[in-house]
Image (cartoon, helix red, strand yellow):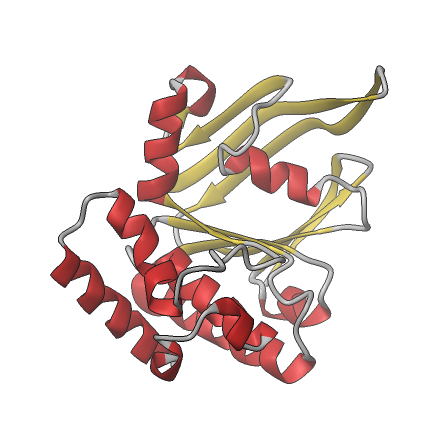
Length: 227
């Protein structure tokens, strides 16, 4: 069963009035339950592709379908709702809200979905327990290490069990041991909860664990490998 399909996907940015083609003719099918990495050198289009798949940006041409529905056909409010309900994001810079504690950051998306306080607190504590970060519940981001912040970001992304999680260079700011633990945790969520994970990464640890790797170069798919 497919969860994401892109068809003839293009993205052109304007750089001081000069058009720059970030992606060109990307045809990609991602099936439910995949643990997939998008690899390639800096500037190859990895982050741009994730942003288009996640409805954070709009394509210049072509289509992105999520569970068979074309994203471009949706209103801005519908896209915002879709991101809340169906897509988890893990960013390289963590993107935690500085004034909120760890558990409040994890609860935030559920609060926007109007989930009752008791339920969202129970879900947050449960996922924190799974990830081994319960002791961080009352800490704010500036009181946590990079690895701890990234675990909180992972918890926030998966707490409502979205069908797909998009992770942009999730291990880039972590030491190798912390990165290894994080990859193991995401593999566990993939295996036990059936969440589809799509990474952009050039970290060899991520690429070794991915069951499929799609390689980009100059905004186009160069090749892919399967395990």
